[in-house]
Length: 378
Image (cartoon, rainbow, N blue to C red; front, side, top):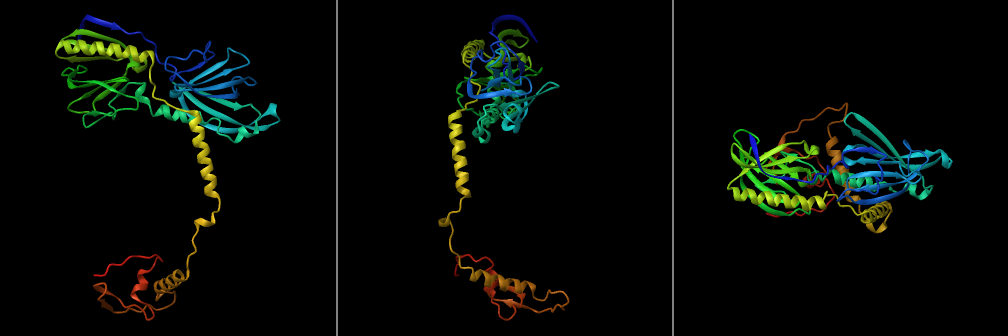
């Protein structure tokens, strides 16, 4: 379908692997963060108990992965991408070198293809107070944020990204242009749709069915080209290997609009790859304040506060419940003969009902709950 190359723009490619790989002992791992990667929290005095027992290190929580590196042996380190994490939890373990004092530990199960990795990061600070503190809370928080920001980093096909013909905008996202009359050449007959160009991604969706769509972050674009096809000049986008290595073709008329979009996408790709936005925003200080406030609120809720209680007159409730129970039990005791009574017409209710036993009033049957209810007089 796509033939002679007429214009091409080979884009500088740096595959986003940090969130998708598990790596061991990478030289200068903790200092060579990729563009846009940020250290969101640092947890000190942490041991890699399974792989490097006895080595004190630090746990770095970034917006793409977890990094552990030894402070004893500089070449020992770990990189665990959030996309590979299957299970996380905390445990109390006994440190043999600390007189079997319980310490808090973080357990991580990572899965890569068919390989499973187990990690155990243990607090070796020896501080008793840290045992009861959520020192690993940032790991859980950032991993959760990462799972909710998939569209910032990866190709998405047929996602819930368009509503009533309008793109659902993500935080920090700005729409730069919208192009209608775009043919998706993925099939022989083609599908007519629209482009939405933002500062983070390129989105296409079909006019006839908006659930037929794609969301492609600039970081997952390997090459942009204008090539000749059997439909005429077409915009060809080759996705990165981490996005499936697809070749996507789009036709836009006239050619001037196609060339303008080609230049715009090339410029936005360059800007974005220099400082990408991975969508994960986390402030550890603010998180600790919220955790402290929640803990204080929970502690206050468990305290007895006399001013929160009101003195209730339970005499009316006991009287109503006694009458109701007596009424429900009448004629239903075991070993007694049930007496059938003729129904009577009740003027207050407007229908026939069983005769109320002596000593009861119709109002007693309504006052099941001892609450004040407003009545409307007709």
